[in-house]
Image 1 (tube, helix red, strand yellow):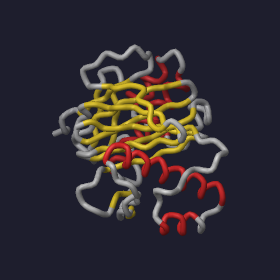
Image 2 (tube, helix red, strand yellow):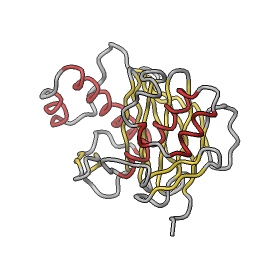
Image 3 (spheres, helix red, strand yellow):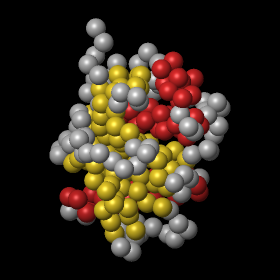
Image 4 (cartoon, helix red, strand yellow):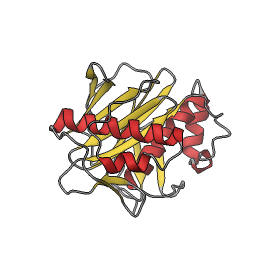
Length: 240
């Protein structure tokens, strides 16, 4: 089963909201302008991807789980994850298993000042220090950590609950035992797609309101990727 990752560069143009139910628009009206704009665009992208892949003409009802993680209320529908970074919007969709997506903008925060990087393990900090661009590498590790965070719905991760081993392409999570992550840096944007269980194929799309979805890449666990920044991390067995 393939996972799908779609990105949309938001412009000033108003989105087409015809696939959104009235309750989504009503809730958006309770938000201040900037959050409302991001909320509507996110729901539009999710709705359009659901229609493109599954033929579902209107966005199904979404609920917020106790963990704070959004999901479709009806059983049998795909799992999804939304992420925003500047004017970039992303949706990850999975028909089987759980999805976690994160986007970050490079250099938006200095590597030593990011509020969550204190959770890095000693091994992660050492790996970052050895890279040619430590700030860029730290941003990618943070993006990967946040995608696994969103996958599990846990409020916080510490070095004890999630450790990444970029040199060997492995990770260990005490919260979600079977996880695979694919991540890359494209221009100023870092993206990371986490999935449980392992990703069989990750199909990437760009969305344009006039042209629809344009397929940009397909990744598999065995595939060799030309990008110098592409990373694949797969779960280690649980520690005994």
